[in-house]
Image 1: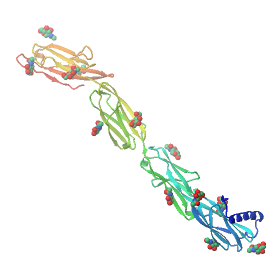
Image 2 (image 1 turned 180 degrees about the vertical axis):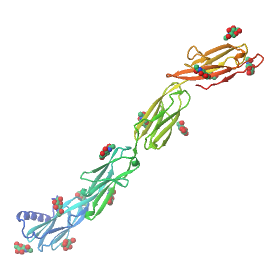
Image 3 (image 1 turned 30 degrees about the horizontal axis):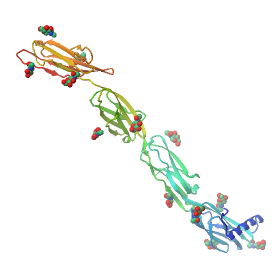
Image 4 (image 1 turned 45 degrees about the vertical axis):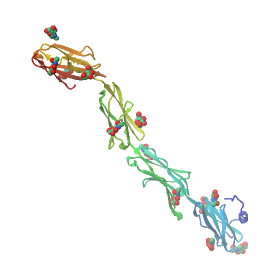
Length: 414
Ligand SMILES: *[C@@H]1O[C@H](CO)[C@@H](O)[C@H](O)[C@H]1NC(C)=O
Ligand SMILES: *[C@@H]1O[C@H](CO)[C@@H](O)[C@H](O)[C@H]1NC(C)=O
Ligand SMILES: *[C@@H]1O[C@H](CO)[C@@H](O)[C@H](O)[C@H]1NC(C)=O
Ligand SMILES: *[C@@H]1O[C@H](CO)[C@@H](O)[C@H](O)[C@H]1NC(C)=O
Ligand SMILES: *[C@@H]1O[C@H](CO)[C@@H](O)[C@H](O)[C@H]1NC(C)=O
Ligand SMILES: *[C@@H]1O[C@H](CO)[C@@H](O)[C@H](O)[C@H]1NC(C)=O
Ligand SMILES: *[C@@H]1O[C@H](CO)[C@@H](O)[C@H](O)[C@H]1NC(C)=O
Ligand SMILES: *[C@@H]1O[C@H](CO)[C@@H](O)[C@H](O)[C@H]1NC(C)=O
Ligand SMILES: *[C@@H]1O[C@H](CO)[C@@H](O)[C@H](O)[C@H]1NC(C)=O
Ligand SMILES: *[C@@H]1O[C@H](CO)[C@@H](O)[C@H](O)[C@H]1NC(C)=O
Ligand SMILES: *[C@@H]1O[C@H](CO)[C@@H](O)[C@H](O)[C@H]1NC(C)=O
Ligand SMILES: *[C@@H]1O[C@H](CO)[C@@H](O)[C@H](O)[C@H]1NC(C)=O
């Protein structure tokens, strides 16, 4: 409280006399019965503000009433038993001391100035990009400046609802936290914090400052991978459906789904219904190979993925043909069944020499061969699974004078 700059003479005088009196006069002498009042008593003033201080006493012979302070002061008048001063630029808490003399003995009086200032910054720390439902979320509010701290409270809010309130404490910046369990209802909710400078007991009121609100996004993601439904086998150049479903997603509509065949993205149609997300697409393989289908669901920065293999095969044929289109009684009929590579054909129970080879049958047409049906059974082994495909053809044998007729029938594959 010692003034730093040179002091007006009066100040020094009173200061020195104060010291002298303090040291020389024993306590309890005359004059002590008179009080030196400092008004206002313990005022609360806005930071940087000014204040009129009145040092007064009832002592009839009061003299040398002065105000000790390091603050900028200006005398604004004095009279019998009083002296008033204007203090300006009050920036911090300070104790004022008035001193004076009554009949040769010293009187002193005190008043504590408390400065108040609104917080310069009230800020809610950034929220996580996505908050998992069912996990604790810590909301942190930072408050810079603001005084007096013992009258400053920080309130954390979810919309208008108070989640907690704590005194700001002495830290600079002050930091206050509250932990809440994130729920689905918190998705899209605004969180904020507010300071309350409560100077109502000082007759000044309740001053609030609020942070900018921050929106929270919560999510729930099951630990299970998506259910991916694809055929185990597919024929090349033939489209087949891809269906990927994941349950227990929140908010399902904000999840991202990727369906890919190998490294080629599929054009997926995504539908969400409640907590269920379904992505569908069609895919086809261009060549014989094992293709990987990937379904990847991403929400809240987390992904769940399922991969399935689809074995693409090529099953050509079988082509079942009669070499002679018209058979008359007694002529030789050649039946051929041919299919693609690795396909094993069996013509009327007689297998071909090797897979990929055609099977032939020759016969002399007789009247009882009319309407005879020839069967060709083709099989292809794809990764241990045997695929079947059958064809049949019917022979018409007519008398020499009648025109013959052939009918080919396609029997659906097994
Ligand atoms: C200071 O206080 C005295 C005594 O109460 C009063 O007479 C005087 O008017 C006051 N001065 C000012 C400037 O308020
Ligand atoms: C008020 O006081 C502060 C420090 O206490 C000082 O930096 C500022 O310049 C002063 N302002 C005036 C107007 O005197
Ligand atoms: C002042 O002091 C003198 C002697 O020390 C005493 O006689 C007188 O009564 C005192 N006056 C007051 C107002 O206390
Ligand atoms: C001023 O504050 C000091 C320290 O907090 C305290 O001891 C003193 O009693 C206060 N003075 C008044 C007049 O309230
Ligand atoms: C959340 O925090 C509270 C205490 O603040 C604790 O009791 C609870 O177990 C925590 N819950 C989870 C899911 O971490
Ligand atoms: C804080 O609130 C007070 C009134 O309560 C207002 O005057 C002041 O401008 C606010 N400060 C900020 C930084 O918003
Ligand atoms: C994806 O499918 C939608 C409709 O199902 C269609 O309109 C769009 O053109 C397709 N995009 C591509 C790149 O195939
Ligand atoms: C799933 O997709 C997301 C977004 O495209 C990507 O970041 C993530 O790496 C993928 N996950 C896996 C396991 O490939
Ligand atoms: C086979 O029969 C068709 C009619 O079914 C006829 O047009 C054709 O000329 C015949 N061919 C031979 C080689 O007899
Ligand atoms: C089957 O017949 C079609 C049409 O005549 C032909 O393109 C194909 O190559 C034949 N397939 C085999 C395995 O002979
Ligand atoms: C068809 O008849 C001819 C002569 O009649 C005979 O040589 C041939 O072996 C017969 N073919 C069959 C497959 O029966
Ligand atoms: C061959 O195909 C026919 C139908 O075309 C079917 O009835 C028969 O059972 C098949 N035989 C074998 C051995 O698969």
